[in-house]
Length: 294
Image (cartoon, rainbow, N blue to C red; front, side):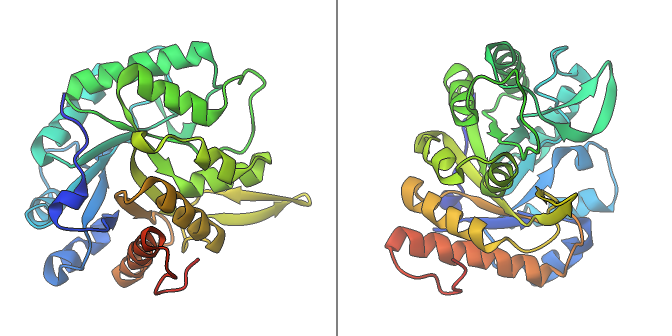
């Protein structure tokens, strides 16, 4: 099985990238922004042609790629769909990404795909289910995958394993790595009243293969504040602070800026990525970041 490839090997000492959107593809080809990699959702490229495929073919001639799945439904007790797995493998085989990832979530029931990434209770029963599905996915594509921690808004009474421990056990049982979404940790911590720093500190450094950063929405519902992981704005200052602390502890990791709604100009995404690059460098050097994001 192929293991995760470090984007540091591509020449980027502090590897940062952004999610690749069709609206930006032509601009990227023409301007070649200073980024270490791009990330795509596998499900957007499970086709045989089209301009977006041709543009991606051109982009991967210059940039490494990370393939991120959103529909494998690794939390499904009925198992994962073989047809979806086959199509996912075709994307991986075609683009040979440096990183492959999926979510700790479920989104399929009785063959019906739900337009969401739904959480699951964290206990011994679901641990066996998710581990089996991860093993099947890794065997199916011949690659190690990274599992992303979710953003959550409620907690389950049936949960009896803390999420950092659950993720660690998955890595131990399957050989997968962790895609550590710092924004998701912060959103979940604020919504469910736990300590984000303690959570992050309980994730072993050696299993983290990538980091995600994103913006989130703050809403007031019936007098209660809730944070929604909408990927529709700049990274929040508190999340930048947690990111800097995390990098200082675990070292440089490929870091992605996610921005999926209210999509701005490419220059805004590049600016956010460069903030992450500067903060990664300063956290490792023990100096103040150039952009003052922390």
